[in-house]
Image (cartoon, rainbow, N blue to C red; front, top):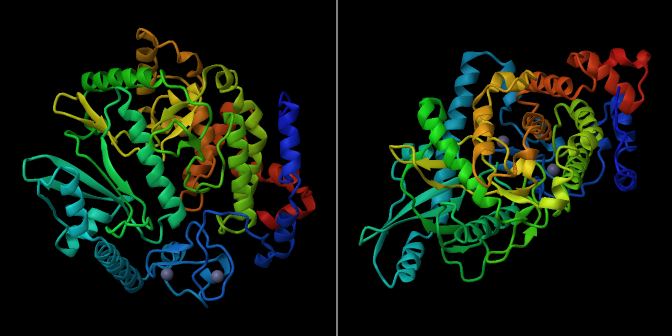
Length: 504
Ligand SMILES: [Zn+2]
Ligand SMILES: [Zn+2]
C-alpha cells in the first residue's frame, strides 16, 4: 500500500495547511448528489472569464474555449441551453454522416475565419517600418499568407504565426506572433510568455547554445506598440526541423552528441529557483508557465515544492470545475494519488536541488525544435516559449523524443532505446559529470506526464501510462483501472464497498 514515509515534516505541514489533502468534501458531495453547482469559488488568476453576459465564473480550460464560436465558457454554460456548438463528445457519439459533414464544415469555416480575424489585427506596415528602423533604414518586405488555404495551413497546429521579414540586402528575420484563438491563454499569460521567451533568448545569447538572436519585442497592450499584437522580432536560422523517425542511426548519434554538448554548456549556468526566466537581461526566475496552471504556480525553491504546488493547483482547478469537467472524480483520484507519491518521486531530484541548482530546459520534447543542416549538424534550437529551470535529473534527462513510446507507456524499464544510447554519450563525454541524477529518467518522465494529462481525450493512453507508472513505482502495483479506482475511492473519499457500485 501507500508509502509516504520519509517526507520532511515541513512538507507535511505545508500539505495540511493548504487544506487540500483533507478537502474531499466537495467530491463526496459531488458523488452523492451529482450536483454540478457544488463547485468551490475560483482562486485562479490566469484563466479566462466566462463570455456569457453577467457570468462571474471562470471558463473551463479544455474544452471551455470553443474554437467554433470563439467563446470562453464556464462549465454550466457549456450546456446546450447556452452553447449549441457540437462538442467532441457529441461528435464521437453521433455517427450520422450528415451530422459529421455539418461539423466538419463548421470547423473548416472556423479555420478560415480565425486566421482572417487574426491577420487583420496585425499592422504589417508598422512592423516593416520598425524592422527597417532597427537596421538603419534597409527596406524590408513582410508578406502575409494570401489565400484562405494558405492561412489555414499556417495557423493550424501551431501556437505561433511566423512571418518572414526579408530585407533588401538579403538578411532574413522572423516576426513571431502568438495566436489568439479560443485555445490561447488569456492576455496576461500571453504577455508573460513573450517576456519569458525573450528573457530566455537573451540569456542564451551569453552561452554557446545556438538560438535565434532577439532584435525587438513588444507586448500586446504595451504603450506605443503600433503593430497591434504582441511580437518578437528575431533572427531566422538556417536548417530544417529534425525528423527523428527518418534519421539514420549514424545521424542520430551525431545529433545526440551535439545535444549532449548543449547540455554541458547549459550545465555551466545554474539558477536559484524552479520556474521560468521573467526579466529580459537578468537571470531572475518567476513563475513557470504550464498548460493547465498558466502562471498561477509561483517560483519554487525545489522540485518537490514545485510538484506539490502544481498538483495542489490542479486539484483546486478540478474542484472549481475549471478542468476535467467530464471526468472530475477520476482526475481528482489520480492527482490526489500523485500528490502522495511526491515524497518518493522527489528522492530522484532531492540532493541535486540544493547542491547543484537548476538548469534551463526546453519545454518541447518532440525534437522538431532542433534545426539541422543536410549533414545533421545542429544549426539552432528554436521555440523557447515555456522553457523552464529544473534540477539536473529533469533538465538533462533524455528528451521524450528518444524514448521508445510503447515500452515507456507499458512500464518497461529495460533501457534499450535511443535514450540509453544518449545516456552513454552523456556519461562518456569529458566534463559531463552531471549524469548521476539521470538514471530515474523514465520514472520521472512518467510522473510528470501523468500530472495534468489530457485524460478526457486520451483515456486509453492514460490507463496504460498510469498503470505503467504505478507498476514501476511499486505502489498499487498490478491493479487494473477499475480495481485501482475502488481502492482510491476508499482511500481518498472514504467510500466503503456498499457505495462502490455507483461508480462502476
Ligand atoms: Zn458563464
Ligand atoms: Zn462554440
